Length: 371
Image (cartoon, rainbow, N blue to C red; front, side, top):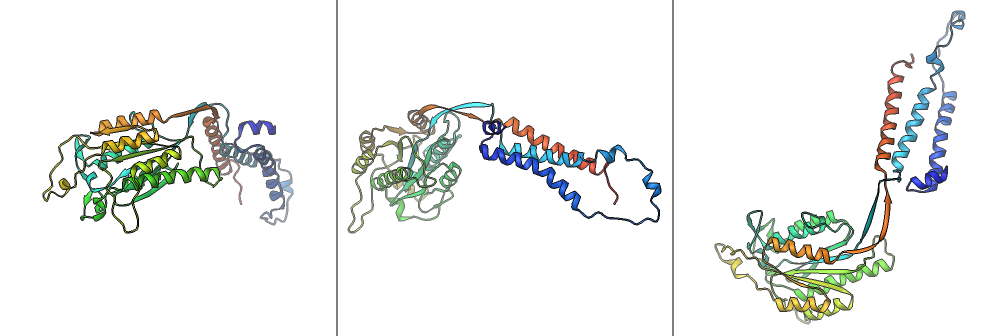
């Protein structure tokens, strides 16, 4: 019988033993409690009349109440155990590690992309397509099994979200990502950090994040997941324009790409410049920040790492690019069969609730006791 539990319940044979022990102990505990409980009494001067009364079928079958309660508890235990028999499906995908490297410099505020019939900033279009790429929407199937993280860069490179399987948290952080000096899609002030594009620094930081994730998985760090391969998706609308700091020389994008290639990281690069004519704001500030994509540098980065360069001119081309990357970075392994019979768990839960309702109904009607 224990083998039966072992085959059908995820927690294993130990859980099967516990279920059996609990199922036996529940009635025993009830009988013991019933025998030792103090009952309310009433004194009578003469009991002859009561001795002549015969017991009714309700009195003789009162054991049904604890039996219903015991069976209900056992049924709910079975539901919580989640029986795993039947309902098989096959999962042939294997997760990889993907780091999205996103340009948040001032030029990403250009409204030269169109989404749902309205003009939007480059940053907003990229954020929406990246979210669809991770979670799945339309032709994009989502990356459910992948570790996905995000690196942003303007004057500095930063990692708002390290590699994670919690794609809901990644989505929330992505939606909060903004250009320095902007809040909720509106420019509050001219921020000095928005005028720089630390491309080499961003590649180096993202490569280090991917490297450390792999090292942690090898070292057995709790929560660290191994990945079949590591990929970086770099999107920018400009060229490398790092800030000058005394005593520190910013990394060259080409050299940073060589480091990534040494670590086995493939870099896909995307140059994003919309085809729609950008609007000219009143003071012309955004128009002055308009950048030109350094396609040669991006092609070189992709070539060094074994990736590919893409040019995005509108939202549809962005979706097409991410769809191609999605198809390029799918890894398949041997079949793994899962048997999760949800119907059996639901049926056990309904039976348990039905037994409890039956007990409640009987104890308040035919088997009601006074006092």
